[in-house]
Image (cartoon, rainbow, N blue to C red; front, side, top):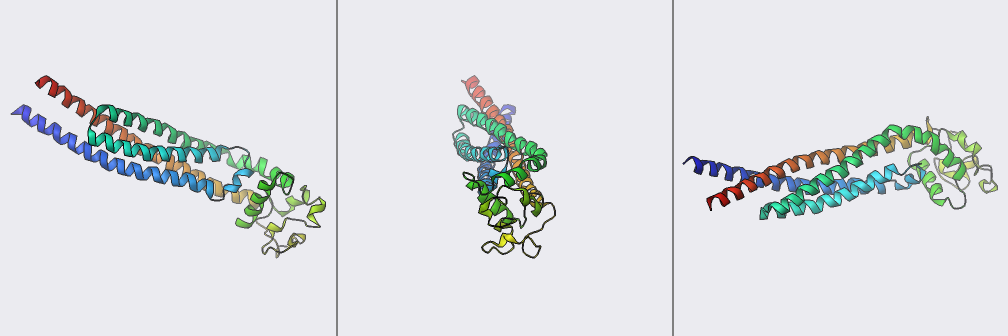
Length: 260
């Protein structure tokens, strides 16, 4: 009687864990889609700005998230198959995949956090030099487009202020045709509007484009870090559930073998 009650209790635990893992895999699969979407959004949404950064850490964090998201979606499907078949070998593979993806997403989250800490210093050291030395120069078309878009999107002019352009290679060159700032500094872009740097004509923003870009990148990095670490914690919960399920299946196999 006691052993029968114990068997029923074990069966109840197995069924509960099985359904919990199904629910988890659905959430896990959805989480993978969110992780991929955040990574892709980070690269597409004003992705031209990446050419203005000194290091590739920001882009690497986004690519890691995309990779992790794709692995999560594949692993979620594998997890469903493993739970349905109740095969310990398949569940063990699933468990290993969970731990691997956990490490990948944790790395993405940590990279985003570390880069967040030194973002301000990097922009101050690098952005001004990039804008003044590379704007409208041969072979630097990507940087030129990025600077133009940056100034128009964020309604700013120059790295710190509009006077930064006075020392630029572009303004001092014949190609500027008398402009004191690029046309992208203008509130309303018209041919050669950059010849006049009056506040009624160009954007005069305190802190310049550095402050605007820093806030934009910081917001993206916080989202990357939060999503990476959040989904990683969800995976830890899934790994614990999977380990418990494997253990119960192992016990059932042992009991079946002892009965024989």
